[in-house]
Image 1: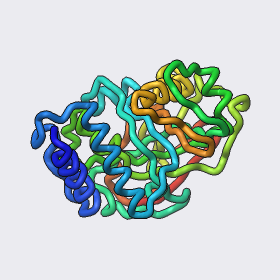
Image 2: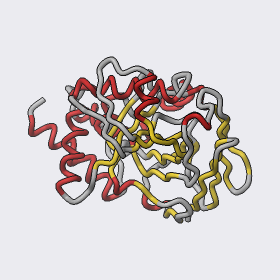
Image 3: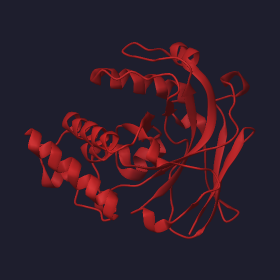
Image 4: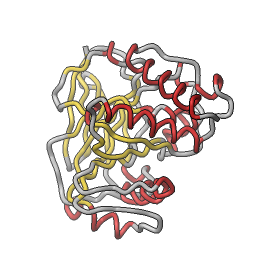
Length: 260
């Protein structure tokens, strides 16, 4: 694909996000779009947002759990940049109209105290680089009509990022059992989904190692202070109605927000 076409894809997705109007899958409009080219589109979009005053604050991994791959018809994880503008405060009221077709996910977030650069990063390296973990909500939202996505579509769309909500119970890794922590999503007091951190590549720390090694191909280094999202521990739940969400890791903490 020509450079002008990459910019066209980026602009189409940014416009869809701004106007809350989904578009046809980019792979339908630009059939030559593959995963590698799609990541270049993602980079262009991120660079444009930073030029306009946003800030890069971390990276995310998505569709790592089998339940997520089954739900969205993908057989491979996606990944993306985390921008400061997508972070909202816990307890915030979110207008449903600000999203196209959003879903709620629960996952641990890791805040780094040291750098990570692949390839060949191990789980031990990841553990040594993490300052603390926090319960987090990611609201995913696709700019593609009806989530009719292949891997290049979600990669070009920055891993279908919508919003991130960090909780208020940071913990050291030694205070957690990340290979076996149950998580639940409740809406208006009723549990609607449950899962376990073991769904995230057996252990979310392994997922971070996978992500940093994958992004090494693009000369990306994780830096101290950045936030890393390793992927949801449960199947994402549609955020369709007004109401109150309570999202909990048992024995660790809860993140809550409202939708109007």
